[in-house]
Length: 157
Image (spheres, rainbow, N blue to C red):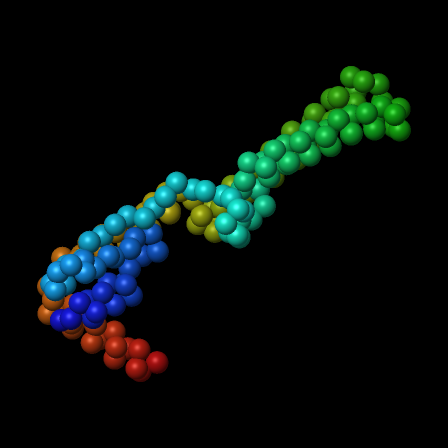
């Protein structure tokens, strides 16, 4: 089996978080697995498409906006609705606590239904790592057979 064939098979069965690096100094088809997981970075400096709410600036803007809305509601209830200061504070506090709690619980339920939980991600990464390890330990003859089977399946579709 050639190095190119082995590398292409490894690359096609590779996960998005690992990279197979072929050792170019040898003529042998040795590959080394390198974990390329990096700490999460949410920056817009490099042109990354980061959704709103994942950078420090976004968190500060959200926090400032919610706080500003609370003050505006508190003083608005006093000025325009004629509430006294204590009653306006109670109404704003109850409203904001209830709304923020409902939003938080709703986001949790959404992550559960979308299977976007930490445990699910860890389990998927573990299963992919096990399959990668099995692929690396597989004899070359079985790799060739697997590759031929894959090519037949591609040609049929």
